[in-house]
Image 1: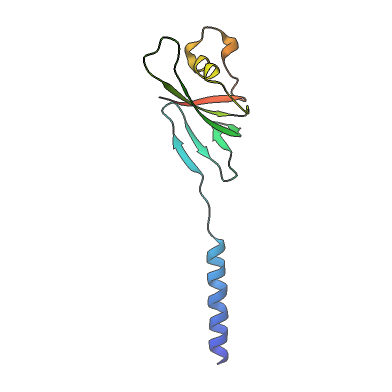
Image 2 (image 1 turned 90 degrees about the vertical axis):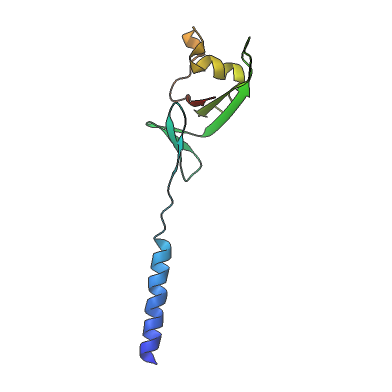
Amino acid sequence: MKRFIIFLLGLILLLNMAGCAKKEENKVEEGNLKTYSELNDGTYSCEEHIYKYRFEISGRMPNAAKNSTFVYLSNLPEISFEQAWKASGLSSSLDDYFSEEDAILVDRR
């Protein structure tokens, strides 16, 4: 009987340790411009920067035949469609671009 109880306690301890060994993986996303990860705490990582938000911003650019979608990782609480398309590389003014600390374009469709 003693051996059975010791065996049972050892088995419970072993199973408990195996349950604690689970490791959560970051979810890797392949944008068509950059690869990024969704971290366990809900933030996003791209290159060496961490971002609070992920935005899919859709709309129609002036004189365009169809809608476009831009996916940004951002530390800014919001990005308008106009800001998104200008900062995607289509503006001739450097004032329209985001710093890498503020936002980064990871996908364009």
